[in-house]
Image (cartoon, rainbow over all chains, first blue to last red; front, side, top):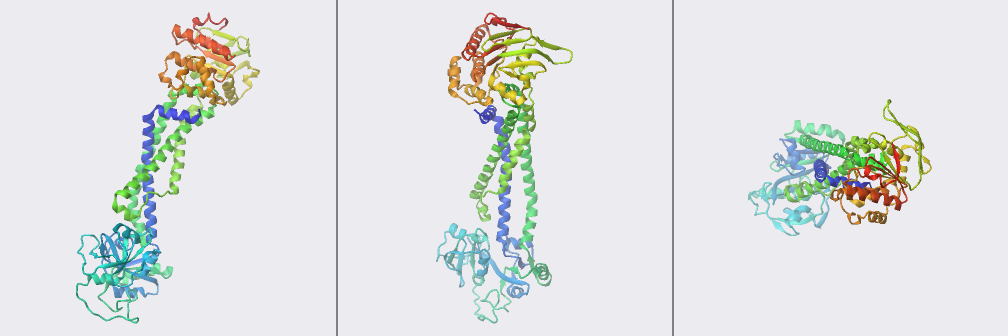
Length: 412
Length: 208
């Protein structure tokens, strides 16, 4: 026999009320947990995915679209830019290095990205199997792609035009899998990497122009197989790393005003995206707090009412030797037991819902949100729920503390 | 041993209840008789340390109650007293056994389950141990309350109208058991009541 047995007895003596209070609180906590997990992981993914990319240069249009398309690979391209213009920019004194990105084809919804090996280095990608792509139509595939499409070394596949599966298939130029990457837990896992020339090759409809083979003098700095002076070649975007902080001020302004390309900063656009999403997240968070407030009120009312019924219990316990402090403590403990149960259940519920969401909704898999991550904020939630329990039981426990045993017991 | 000296209590400035001095030896059985409002419950609560002393002194087993702080008094109650009231005041959310174990737990002494069995057997309700309070009859519940009062082997058992709510048959049964367990546990028994049925069972009477 101890206080816990007593409290469990009390909670079990009004099961529906206890259940209501715990469920109400756990819903609020679950909602906050889901938002927390989603928000934190999304922000982490965004900063991970845009690491090493200071500026994205592409065709004019929406800057947010440019970032979404070329960094996170979720939106469609704004258009193309001329290779020779991109080349000129890559040689700019404020640019430390520039990586070309050519989009346009996909395989089973996974994007084929024409780029250089430097792109994979941005994400510190390592090979799990095989080798990096070298020649045209050779690809190195991301870990998730390889796993879900069951691609192995030496496999060949025909890409589809466009970024969705319905596109016209480029049967005449099959790609061959040259290597498979280890998981990087970034957007790279969902991509198929090849060189820029391969993207051009599958789109050249039989107008095979022999062309001049470029040598080291007149080759493009971005794509060594193309002539720097070639005005017909196009890429989708250019990922730029600044040489120094001055570049952050001068380069975007120069590109946006002096060229017919546009420059967008991933960190700035991500922040803008979050401020747009923020309204929705704030509304949901607000709703969660309303739920928590109502559950706190409900717990308070339950304790307050039961204290009236329990005045004889309290008096008899005092007569058996319980101190005022013990009764105060018992009432506090009952409040805290309720809120702690509610928040533990809420956190479990939050993770479970997110787990079901990530397993059942395929699209969410590419977002890379995991349900099995614990953030330190969740400990704060638990600590906060203890405080909430103390607050809810403040007035009832004071009532318990100040029970006049003589008056209560003299009543009969 | 209980010694009461020049004891008086005042609920409001006009009316003061005074009590005559008395000495009760350990193991004695006393009946506190009087009309309602005569101060039976007041005296019982003063004796039991449930009501703070205003004037006069009460000495129980060599300890003067007025010298104890509130928390010392709480502990003193737990160790030396057993209380029985008109209503059983059992904790309805607990089982019979859990109710009984509350007594040693709250008094801060060791919880002994065999002692629970022993007391329940003395009161002939051993088979009710695991039952919830709601499942008991009125007479059974009052016996559980008695069991709880004697469980810690208190030196003083104070009972306030323990039989008033019971019919003749249960009154007989409960009062017999009360006297019997008080004797078995060598406790002083003081019963405050206006129940005339108890008069012929206990000879020592304090008339208020």
